[in-house]
Image (cartoon, rainbow, N blue to C red; front, side):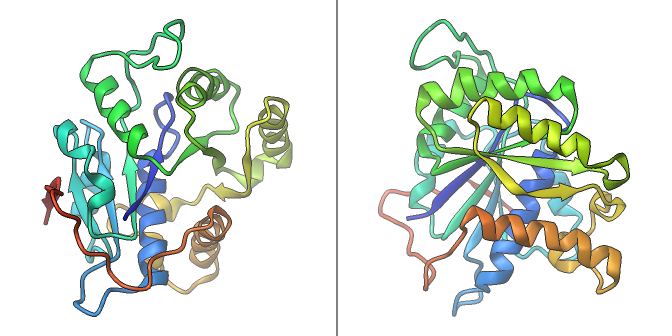
Length: 247
């Protein structure tokens, strides 16, 4: 049974696509392909904007399978039956949310139905956030209005921090998370120009000092997040109609 890791935050521009692709790449690199040469890992795009699909299509080599599930709400319910150890899911940045409705705050718009189906399948949610005050409110809404009411395990990760700005920004953001009792990763994903290169993921970076440092953050976060695959490629379970796979 596949483990489904949803990357989610209501705020745009926090790095959901970047984290989905690079966590998928690290996990695929550590696991290696199965005996049949097929990957143990998939990255799925539930974002109608298709940023993860756009970036993945430009990779010289894709170390994981790519799934387009933005228009496939019915098959999202079958994701755990797919023949992978792990599936990382990039999500839309917006959905209709009514925090006064009780247990299920998601609306019946397209994005709400996508997120509801995904969170029903999710083993955990990665919540990326920036070291910026205007990221606090949408992160709080994501956790308090959606993840907590639905009872989905989550972990916040501080992303895109520029070390030149000083550790005070990290400490302030971490302190805000701790004040709200939000589990926050020790690993901070630093800002590097190489991350904006759409033709590579971190496992394909060069062996120079800067790119090794950029790669290290994702390996550390993957280790901290406790990712571990099955010893063999999992067979697809009966009745699992695979979401569309992009070449």
